[in-house]
Image (tube, rainbow, N blue to C red; front, side, top):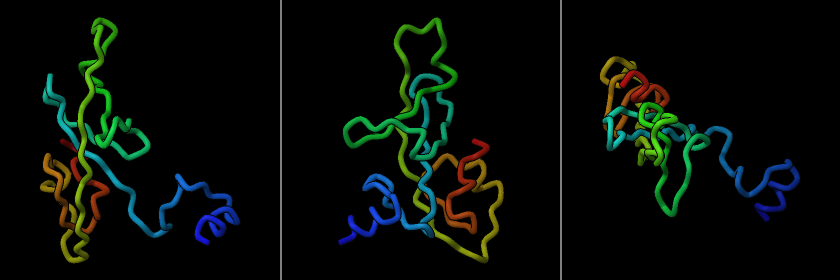
Amino acid sequence: MATMQLALFGLSLDEQRPFDAPETFYLGRCPRCHRHHRATADHTKLYGAARYVPCTRCNTSSNAKPVLVPVLPIKATYHAGTPCDSRCLSATGHHCECSCNGRNHGRMA
């Protein structure tokens, strides 16, 4: 039944995300240069059950083997009364508890 409803709206099974659901962001740290990387699901590669992004600092033309950064989803808890501040913007962990609902989490790390 749900597949038929999705077909009516031109959505494939891969695009099943409620319109009001927040976008999932991922955060990880390069094992070689220790730079933090933040990405959306669209910019990650899925290998088995884990997601990875290429390291933008380590992956240069001189490196023969690309460096992949394992990323984990940010667990966001929405708190309307808690404004997003430097604790959220500079965060390196995977838990967000402010009004941005994970959208700004780790953006400046």
